[in-house]
Length: 462
Ligand code: EPZ
Image (tube, rainbow, N blue to C red):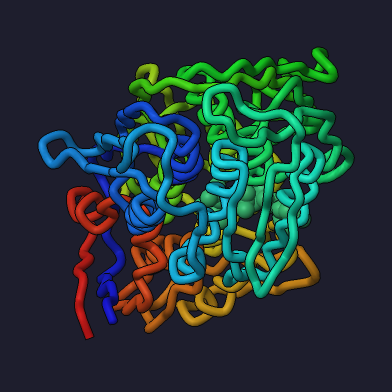
């Protein structure tokens, strides 16, 4: 079993290039099932999750080729001639590895009139229900049943697709997320199903994460007709400053066929935020390149409140540095109060990374997790490094300590793993971080990027 060996106490310095977004790439990969024409995706991160999605698409009849001559460039073509797919079933063996496999459900159902996707299990931070996916597809006329741990869906619309002769879903009003936290992948599934449905679909309170916006832009690029309606335009300015959610509905006019095209995936905002954490916790100075600052307003605000200096150097570069000149003179970051929320608020995927930094901040930091019921598995492992954290319900009270000491720790999920990397980089002495496979799911070449910044980190097997 692979593990990272980290000798902490080194300030990270230099520049790092952010990779394409995992959470944008996965639903866009799935959406290529909607067309029989060639799609070329660029800036795709090479991760175990995008490799799993490659296997899944191949099992469904797509030919997926990663261009070895041009990193991040992926060519996706139908295996057979147009219109035929060998398989509309996403197997448990693949889905159990990656919950995001569920985003093939909507595309398969609307393109081939049927789909069977194994129910994704829970994950390290509690149950991950899929009721919104199911009720959203039912609102489009799908017959959806749970049979032996599988979601079995069929299009029951009376009309047939003129291009394929297959029964279509029927467009309609989808209120399932009204008054709730909008679900990112449920939005993606319902949207992907609607683009080939008969008639018009209106999706209330659709997710507005940049990754879903990237899917909308990709679908429009291959011929889908999607418009965005904002419920309260007065909130839009605050939304774009990262200060307030703003409810949107997506209106989709179903078409019978989509074409191919070439599309570049957006940068990964969570990877960019993770490197801000690595800089903050080691008292370092990083130029974060190939990022998208407009996706990071809430993250930047919080890190500035913690005492980081963050300057935008160009349209896709942020210079991040701590006030302290050297690690031991790191000006103690001050504690703050933060709650995670739907975009553009502080992202749940950054909660563990922020907690790691807060552990060494002056005073107390209060972190509220409002998206998931129990996303605190990293707390126990941070405590093994010397952190002092109290949990009460969905709140974590982090009592700043002056130093951390290396220890043996274990990643429980992707972002918990990244938080333990951050804390180990600041801890004195040697840390061993096991189960790095979690980290490899969502960070492209993290080891190489950290080594280039001066981190003393190696990968060991055993
Ligand atoms: C996406 O997961 C991301 N994953 C997650 O990132 C991210 O944490 C999450 O969105 C929230 O931003 C991918 O994009 C691959 P949700 P998703 O449906 O879509 C509840 C990472 O680290 N819910 O937006 O599965 C759910 O329990 C991963 O990269 C229902 O109740 O999350 C949660 O409380 C981790 N019913 C809330 O909605 C449903 O049918 C938001 O979950 C679906 C979700």
